[in-house]
Image 1 (cartoon, rainbow, N blue to C red):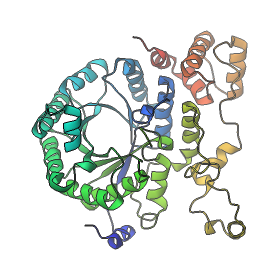
Image 2: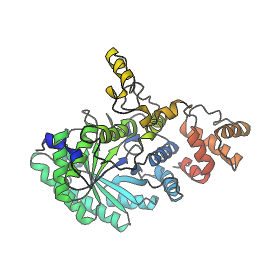
Image 3: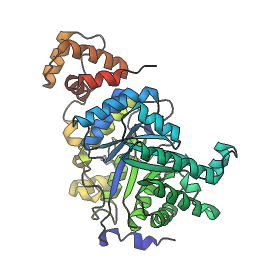
Image 4: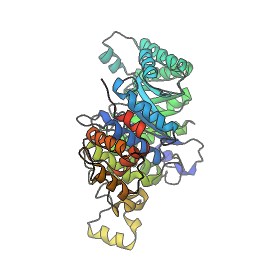
Length: 425
């Protein structure tokens, strides 16, 4: 088992490997029950993630027909430099036919292939029709199909890995990972699908898997027991201590199935401000925390869910102090009761300005109103009539007023926006 005292000495060890962030808001986040994002809003999430320096966005489901135009348009925006250098990836089942459909419908070049690996899921989902070896064969066939299709990054997702790495079953996860590597996979995604792990167990499991397979490990955690962020960080450290890079899956505001996934801002703060890690410089240096306030508020408004007042970093009470002792300490030195400042999250910059959502042009607006709004925003409009049409359709598409960045995108990339707004049966 791991030694907690040793794990607190992160900063004392020089490490060459890094932790990178793969945000899955546009895949797992949009699977949050009862809510969702439009294709334009998903595009804006990719845009903000790129500005934030996030390594990769799992942008959606390339094997689904209604995602086709959105994915291809976003890949065009990447080629045009707007969505670059962020890696735009897709998710599909670890089935060869799904891989083939994904590359037929889209030009995606990065894929994660997912299949259940625990005994309980193998029995419960496949009803005894597939053996454990059948599962590995299905996965390797999918990896082979991805290699043949020229996919540049192949991640293999071990769904319910946390309940696989137990008792008699732990060697199967290593066998699964080695088979994926042998067939050409580039990364293994360790999925704590039910939020079942604890920090010690996920550290040990990931370290053992990484040492045996010697591939970078992705951490995909859920928050059913409140451990998602802690498990992501400790699981990543297990990979780092095994000598490989780690990739943490996050979602903006912790959205996701059931109790959600690891929150993007919380993970960044944990990797840069916590005991033993604040001086380790282990996080991808491109990450810009100053984008936090902007992206968190955009996603909250797009989902129609207010940010909880006690949300880490960006909640209304994140920097509020009421206790007399706390207030006194704060007035003397901010560091008495704050590990980080609001300015580090970009809050000061946007609080002094109006934040989107009050735009006087929409689905029933006219040319004069449109041009007034664009003039106020300082955005040049090359084709007013086309822009008005797209603004009207985009308002209807989102079912809410457009923010300035959406209006800017429409004016500057009308061809791609038109494709994104086109969702055909």
